[in-house]
Length: 55
Image (cartoon, rainbow, N blue to C red; front, side, top):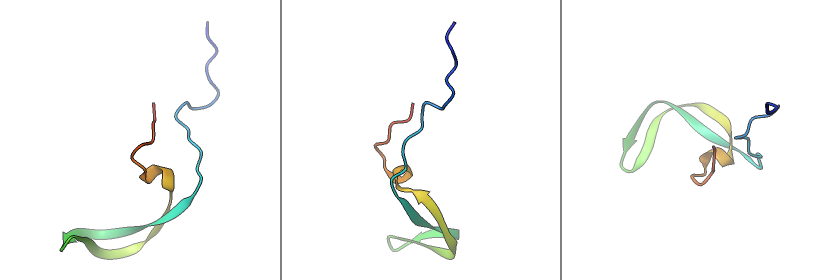
């Protein structure tokens, strides 16, 4: 029998937090996203990178 892991296997380190704008009623006009800015949310920069490997 194998012992279950005590931690998740898809965890990656967070190196930097960035603020991402949160819009209500977003729309795409003239090549830009516009809408009513509701605020900002703190997001790990790793979540925005396409090359992260989650198993």
